Length: 116
Image (tube, rainbow, N blue to C red; front, side):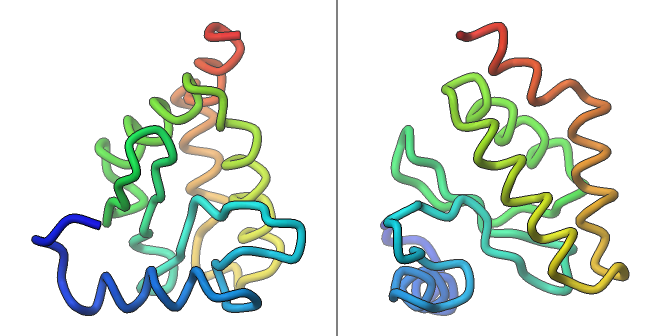
């Protein structure tokens, strides 16, 4: 992890890597891309292509572009499934359904079909 990340960010990512922690690895070894923060307003987005973890606002253009890049690299289906799970599991006021809808309207997940 980059040395310029905050101590809180490093601790959050480390806690998420422990088995059974929210946003961590599940029993099948699946990698979680999204770690929700601030009642769904922000997220840590893990990028498997470059090993970085980004802290982004879920409504920002930067978030949309980061997810689009991951979708183009073949990770779109898993990210979409994680967003659908967050929308189902967490309270409606967190807005994960709105986040997913915004990404779909921006054709973020269409990039994966083009790349394949």
